Amino acid sequence: MENPKTKRTVIVGGGIIGLSLAYELAKRKHAVVLLEQEGFGEKASWAGAGILPPTCRTTAIHPMECLEAISSELHEHWAEELKDLTGIDNGFRKCGGLYIARSAGEVAALIGMQFEWESRGIPVEELNFQEAHQRLAFLNSGENALVDEIVPTISKALWVPSESQFSNPAHIAALISACQSLGVMLHEHAGKCQVQVENGSVVGISVGEDKYIGDQYFFTAGPWTEKLVQPLGVALPMQPVRGQIALYKVDGLTSGIDLPVVNDGTRYLVPRVDGHVLAGATIEEVGFDCQTTASEVEELRNWAESLGGILGDATFVRSWAGLRPATYDGFPYLGELGHSGTAFVATGHFKGGLHLSTGTAVALADLAEGKQLTVDLRPFSPARVTCHQVSEIK
Image 1 (tube, rainbow, N blue to C red):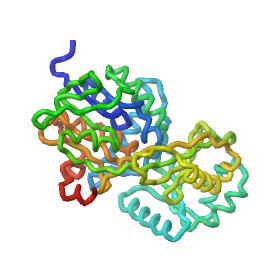
Image 2: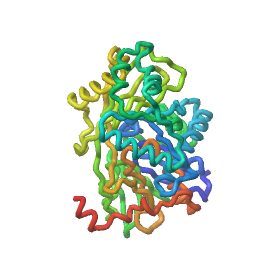
Image 3: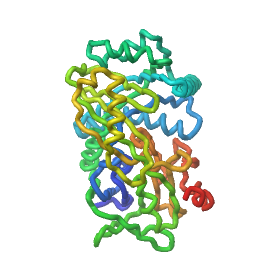
Image 4: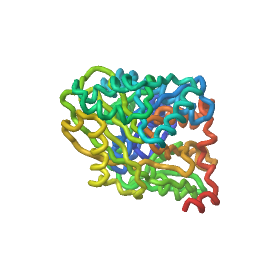
């Protein structure tokens, strides 16, 4: 029999944010129902690269910095916790990040990043020509000719040892398995969800002829959340931003060691321990079009194969795209919808959804339970969007 103190919780949106929140709430003995119109984690959550940028909690001042730092700490903890619970290794590892800049604009941007990291106490090392060469050598599996061509074009290179990564598909699989073991009712391919509202409060979620009633409701459907919560009279303007990624399989790539993430301007290479390398990502405002395009994939591949010589001989596996939810001010929407204490939202993380998923889950769970928050959520409140701001965006 269900504990009478157990809160019935309905979550709409089964991406990384919804799955993480379901996992966190289930650990706290909530009776959780998770509804996903399509497949769990099939959108931007699966499409990302799983890069965890450097953070430092002790020097974090702004709430966004705090959320980032707490999320990073939780990722390491969750990786062990999920592996113990499900047996699935999500590939978390502190691999370090190599940052290179070639154009004058990229150098200026990297200098700004270096100043920020140093001011926040995040370790960063400036690399000379030879050191940059050594960090890139793994791309050529012992053949350095093409690296020799790349390195002279690098005007600035930095090494950030605290950068980490994890395999988001494996992490999603672990979260699904963990939710199942904790008793979460998982409904994927559920169809269109509709919010039922009475007197300004959510009273249920309808999916076809089925209705799900909870004590609390969470909306975590990425850029689709804006339309989902309209019955509440709430405006959450967002712009879906497409990102395309290419995947390679490299037979000669050394496995079992911490190969670094390579950041070249706004693009990156992420080598996995299984010999795959991700190359990404584009930034495109194309509405809700989640299809890959031949021109963008070709441009991405040309860049990747020119940066790493080994990729020129690697096997191109496939490409894919995801839609990131972007807000007008760059901050996610995290918090209560209205003043009923029963409806909450967590969306709008843009490119940071995978990274911020852990901290977001804990913060929203604490908020819903009335606990003291470790992150000041006021800058992320959905109430910050005024009618005036909405009219400007539209």
